Amino acid sequence: MSENYESDLLRLLDERGYIHQVTDAGALDQLAVKTIIPGYIGFDATAPSLHIGSLVQIMMLRRLQQAGHKPIVVMGGGTTKVGDPSGKDESRKLLTSEVINENIASIRTVFEKLLKFGDGPTDAVMVNNDEWLSQLGYVELLRDVGPHFTINRMLTFDSVRLRLDREQPLTFLEFNYMILQAYDYLELARRYDCQLQMGGSDQWGNIVNGMELGRRMEQRELYGLTTPLLTTADGAKMGKTAAGAVWLNEEQLPAYDFWQYWRNCDDRDVGRFLRLFTDMPLDEIAKLEALEGAEINDAKVVLANEVTKLVRGQDAAIAAEATAKETFIGGGAGEDLPTLSVGSEGMRVGAVLTELGFTGSNKEAKRKLAEGAVKLDDETISDPGFVIIPTANQPMKLSLGKKKHALVSL
Image 1 (cartoon, rainbow, N blue to C red):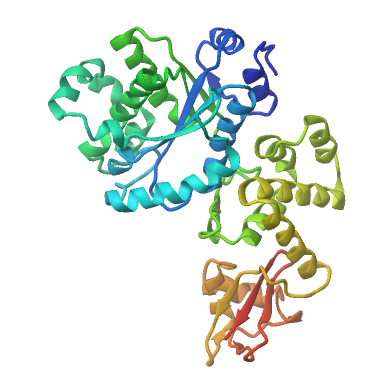
Image 2: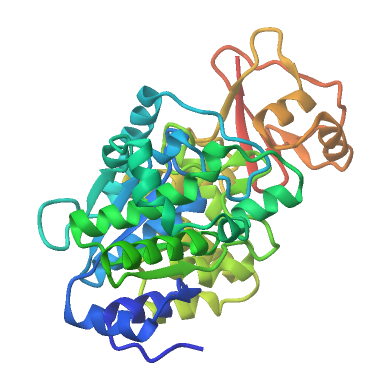
């Protein structure tokens, strides 16, 4: 049930389904009516790209800006050196400063498509928490910040408790993560008068920690807001597929594969995804999500086009849809399909399916072949020993079912 918010900010977030928990919603609502609120979300730089599990957070910063407030993108150059223990069974591989900085530069390219950066009061800024975290002296941190945290309370946080419950090791390095993240909020409040931290529901404890640190050390009134844990209608975690993560950057995932992820979503997710991941008006979304039967596929194409346009650009969306039409309707092999090179000696069809990520194992590939679900240039292949050997200038189209297609070349 929607709340009767007065501010454009909370009304927009509420209508589009972003709000799970919010601290002192009434006071935050009134603050958002009166003044420009600088708000932040932190992103660690463990890879050259974020995946779509982070897209809801990026879109929240976009909504913040659309409602007339100031987004602060905090890249975790410092916290990436430590590692967030949330939801993990083992310690994160530690990266060098050089790799972390390269990752941040690559990740920034996506934010530049979705946010307006600049020096204006509502322009976005990107900051690296390594600026202040690496300057902290250890004794200084212990003396100034340490007294505001109790081990008793830290042990109750899900990120710590779940790891210990599973009897998995939690290093002292990782145990410090929540202290550093809380300190980020205090430092952002000092530097940018930041008053709002947002994040996924798994970050609630870390956000509250930061708010309390700001209140105890400097009597600051700070706020927190989290989104619901984002899963698909079938219960899968957003951003993961059998073939791997759905990356936001082109270098990590071709535009066609990105487009296809949204085109192949569950019918039940269409309306929710349109609200969260596009700028389409709510009345248009309501019409699309009301479609039934085969018509819902038209809504999925709209979803795929709109999200791809935002994240990858208009040209990428047009090319991906054209490739899909050529593949599905024309029976052709569009240029943007994923391609696998098998060499002059070729490769068994089952190995090709697994290498492409169409199947999770050779055993699964054999089963799909036996079911008649595999086609090579639109001819059904059922023999697991069949070797695909393309000719020099003519790639072959390999299909699994109606939705997965790839080109196999020399």
